[in-house]
Length: 74
Image 1 (spheres, one colour):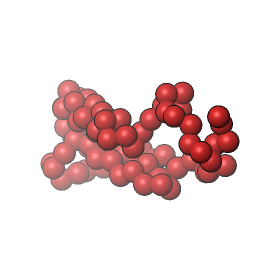
Image 2 (cartoon, one colour; image 1 turned 30 degrees about the vertical axis):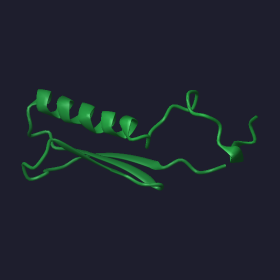
Image 3 (tube, helix red, strand yellow; image 1 turned 135 degrees about the vertical axis):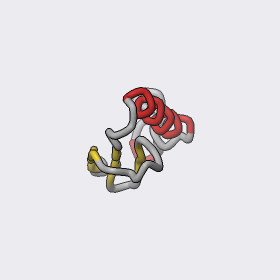
Image 4 (spheres, one colour; image 1 turned 180 degrees about the horizontal axis):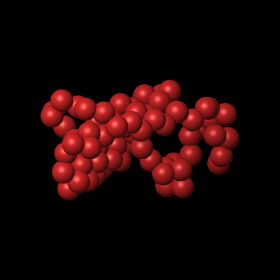
């Protein structure tokens, strides 16, 4: 069984570039939020980042994806 990625959430100063940023790899998922931004801007950015992950196919729900041949499911 494949080990799940480590999830880390951090508060950091993103130098005014963006309210939030994400790095997604096979080993880790890092979410950084710059809380100096207004809450509405942070929420909008998080929604965009999360929707991009879903729309791109990087993130799927286990119950909706077709079985992978290695899963041993028919």
